Image 1 (cartoon, helix red, strand yellow):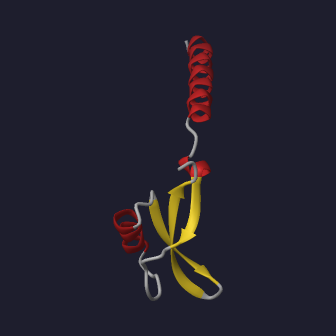
Image 2 (image 1 turned 90 degrees about the horizontal axis):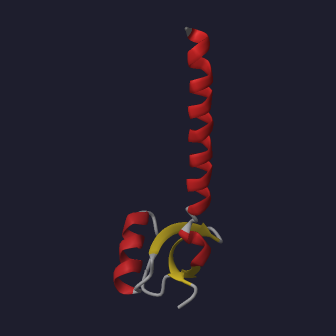
Length: 84
């Protein structure tokens, strides 16, 4: 009986793997279209990314924002759609 289940399991496993590959190739990260720019409205060091993200979205109409260290400074960077 175990021998009869092995081919079915292998078949379904192969179908599952193919579906995962097809779906993952269709989903492309949005990062390809984003351009990074230092925030024009942030002052001081940037330690909490969620605050930077909120300010970039609200004040600068960016897709999102994040804190990064550049030249030993904690800075807020906003990410905009490059195609605009």
